[in-house]
Image (tube, rainbow, N blue to C red):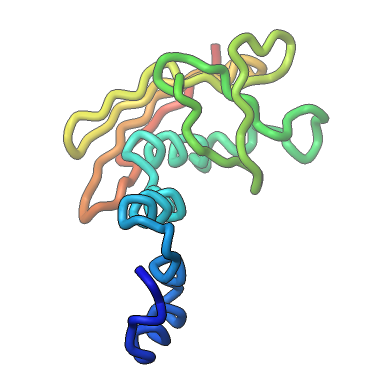
Length: 154
């Protein structure tokens, strides 16, 4: 579309709203739509929210030893089926790192993340500290909350 044919108020509105690409004669509506989709942040999936809540369980925090043991930061998560696509998770204020075979590096592992409607069950372990756990979560009003959890030393 040629910007010379547009009324000044439309030109101004496009510029103010950040829609300057609409004024580009080679920009097509299809290109504009795909560009807008790429810049919009995707909300975290239910699985991502559930996994993040498990990593942040209060009872797990003492086992991470992030302040007193070197090599615990960033948190390494073993890439297993429940997190095969490497969801965007954070711990200690930074993104977690995924490893297929972490070797001697301390790692966290999600053994199971099962979501059925508004409930979720998660099984996990942190082998370097010899702990395993389970968590049951429930979604209410669009927000996931931990209903119960347990940790066991192996």
